[in-house]
Amino acid sequence: MTAKLSKFSLPLKLTFLIFSMVLNCMGIVILQLSEAKITYDKLGFLESFKDLPIAFISLFAVNFISKTGTKNSLILALTIVGICSLILPFVEVFWFYKLWFAIIGTCFAIGKICVFGMIRNNVSDEKSLAKIMNSVEASFMIGIFVVNTGFGWLISSRFSEFWKFGFLSISVLSAVAIFLFSRLEISEPAKTDQSNVFKEVSGMINPLMVIFLAVIFSILFVEQSFNSWLPSFYKNHLKVDSFFALQASSFLALFSYIGRIVTANIIQRFSLSKYYILCISIIILLLILIIGIQFADTDDSRILLFYFRLSGSSCHLFIR
Image (cartoon, rainbow, N blue to C red):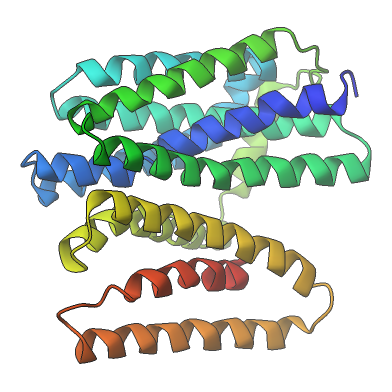
């Protein structure tokens, strides 16, 4: 590896922290814009503006990255994210949020390929590779916690009307990450024949692969939509304030990360089929409890906040 492990991993972790914050601020945006009298019919389309670019750009981003290099491509993506986050607080029109999320989704599609490409091309030791991959994944989950907690404090303070200026902190983090990458020397992969790249992509297009990708996209889309609309659900149906709604959402991410950590240790020691049956049973039990509580205590169902947090860990136990 061309740089020390700590110096190499820090900007990568910071990159995933930044992308996690901008990708998972959807719930905050929906919560605040709904109070600004933007209808849910309009807000319902925001998720697609973020997720569809991630899905489609990921298929063709390799061609762009191979020409410009992983380091330059990632710096460009971070620069665009920083500029867009700097502009957002000063724009009032709703259509800009659609454009903003589309740009963020495109940059993330490029950024994630660059990050994993850098790790693959610069880390050969298996132990170091596992350590960096775990820390990068942890940074993504921490980003969800940080963005919901930070904006929750801002929205609940006396400066709540200036909540959009919280995105300026993302611009600052982007500038720091760009500075770290500019000082980092990395190994770039050898340039490949572009015709071969397109042949490989075209060779992957078959009915089974299309079905597989459609299922994966559906799972991710449902999961992201669940996270995006959860704060509004908490506030409108469980009658909690914006701060507590966002805090509950951030703890959902924390429990999801715990689920990943637990799963990584369990699957090596127990039968996979029995493990899946256990996870499905836990999920069904949670759903029965949630439905029972709603029917038995419709006036005050705040205990559901805690069950939704537990669903984060149990669902990730199953998905892993």
